[in-house]
Length: 117
Image (cartoon, rainbow, N blue to C red; front, top):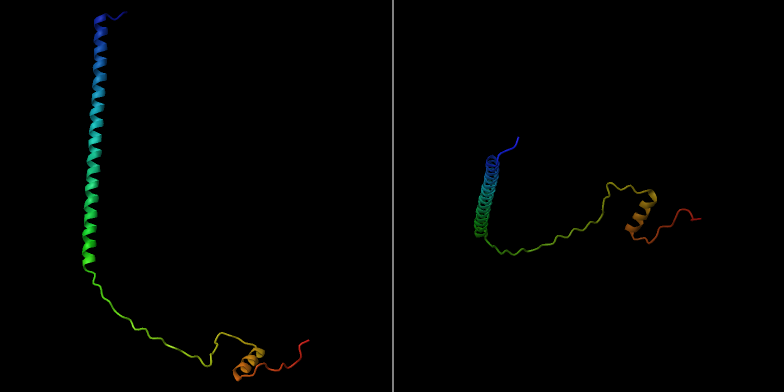
């Protein structure tokens, strides 16, 4: 069973035609995909430009609304003198109170009740 040369040539021509058609369709699809990608990129760049222009416009409007006011602040100091502090949360033992009372009255050092060993 052999294939005659005419059929052989016809099969080769059909195979070459199918291959060429497949390559052409692939090129068309690649071109179409590239065109769609470039279109999406252009749309996103346009949107970005519009957003930047809107932000710039709002910024300029906000800057125009700023009013510079120079004021002088007179600083006053407040002095508080505490004469007898009251320690609410402080617990002082009796010896400590003797030291504090001696310091308030102006005595240098109180005399200890018992000598230190």
